[in-house]
Image (cartoon, rainbow, N blue to C red):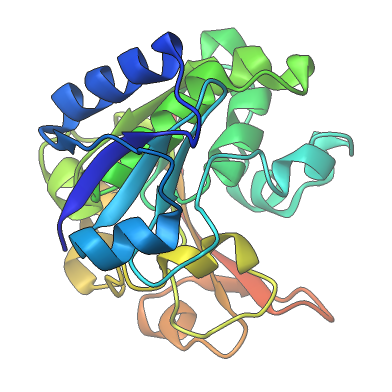
Length: 260
């Protein structure tokens, strides 16, 4: 599907410049908005639309009236709780100074929690294979203005535009402490509404033996899987399932114990 870049309904010099910069970075065409509503642009151009606003980028896939944009999402309330009790942190064993690789960045909520934990001595990298989604998230992490207590942790996250398996294969052995994966849409989950506009755009890659093997090679401490409670991936790939009563997501872990 083609993607074009435009401005907000009433453009300013700032949003015009941001549209040009976004289009140049992604190798896309800028189309003047001319006060046309999104549905009209969809009809005329048959293209996904990136709208450049002063405060954020918004992606409108064809046929969608609601945009996809960066927001801290669940990290907003998870960050207010004791982080050591967060299910991801508890299962992974992540601590300050660790290196964390999120193979399925999504809205970056899990990466943001990891970044809060590892702190400025740690490192957080997230993979997103779709260049447009990756850019929306990267710019959001860089420019989000609300919740100032999260800004430093947001800015610390490095977004890599690459399939997770390809990225893993290029890494040295034991170069991350924790490798995390949350393959999307093995089950449709109503609560995951933030990705609703992207059901047709996002990478639907399923977990594979190669993916898990590479993750185990790269991880010093643990490989963590988050999946629907009905998923058989935990047992298929050797993850020890951590059952979470009354939740639709479970976590699983493979302990590597290669840390020195």
